[in-house]
Length: 408
Image (cartoon, rainbow, N blue to C red; front, side):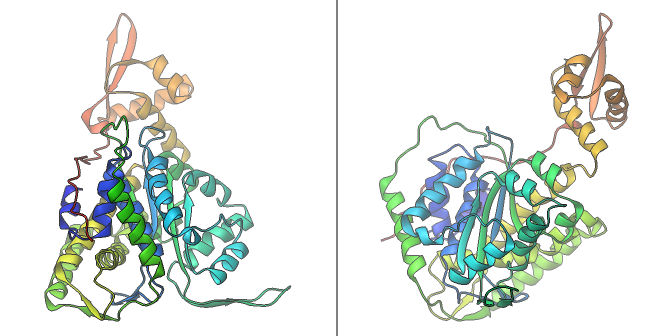
C-alpha cells in the first residue's frame, strides 16, 4: 500500500484523502483509497474520458471493500467519504433503487450518481437468484457500468432516454457474505468482476480521530469544485513513455497470470485488470488537475494507476481462492476458521462451527491431509490447531500516512 501512496502525485486528491481518512478511523488504508476512487469518479465531469484502452475509458467505478465484521471498520471508512461528499455535493449521492426501473429513472434525471451500500450483504441477499426484481437490479448495475446511452420502453408511460450514464458504487461486506450470496458467474464476468476489490484487516487503533480542519476543508472544496466542472479537456492518448510502460506491464501481467487463465473463477477478474488500471490512471490524472485542457496520460500517472490495479488484483485473487464453491466446502472452511492457531478441543471447535460431530469428523480428516491443521491428544481429549498453511496470507501492511502538503 505504501508503494501506491508514494506513486501518487503530491497534489493528488486521492493522496490527500487517504491521509485525512487514515487519521479519522482505524480501517485499512486500501479502504480509504477505494473510497477516494469512488469520490473522484462520481464528481468528475461526464465528458471526461480517456481514449485508448477499450476505445474509451470512463471515470465511474464500482468499489467493494471487504474484511471481517466489526473489527475491520468498513462502514466507518465509507462514512468518512460519504460525509465529505454530502457536504460538498449532496446531489451526487444516489437514493437506494428498489428495482431496475427505479435505477433507470434515477440515471435519466441525474446521470452522475454514487450508490452507497455500507452493508452490501443486504443488497446481495435481495438480488440473489430467484427474485426477478432483484436480479433485474443487479443486472442493471452491470449493464450501465460502461456508460453507454440507451432508451427504455415501457408498456405504460413514455419511453425514457438515458444519455451517458455514470453510475458509481461504493459498498462493503464480509468475505463470508460474498461466499453466501455470489455465484461463479458473478466472478467470471458478472457483477464482482466489474468492481475494484480491496481486502484488508484493521491493524492499528485510533482511539480518537484527529480533526485536521484545514485538510478537511481542502477535500470538501476540491469535491465541490470538481462537481461544478462542466467540461474536461480532450484525451489525446498516452505519451510515448507511458505507451512503453503499458506494453511492458501488459506483457509481464500475461506471463505472471498465465497459469490462472484456465480458472473460470478468476479469468474475468484478470482480463478486466487492464480496465481497472486504465480507470485508476484516469482518476489519478483527474484528481491531480491534469485533465482541464487537452491532455496525454503521462508515465508516472499510469504507473500509479497500475499499482492501484495490482493492489485490487491481489485482493481479488485472494478472495477468489478463499471463497468456497459449494456447501461442503463452506462447512469445511467454517470449521477451519473455528480452529485457531492455539490448541482447541474438538468439541469446542465443532460447537463454534455449528457442525455435527459426524459431519465435522470427515472435514477434520481432510484438513489434516491437506496440512492445514495439526492434532494432539491430552488425557484422552483430542485437540487441534491451525498450521501456518491454514492461515490466509493477507500480506497487507498498515503504515502511518505522511501528510501531503496542502495545495492553495
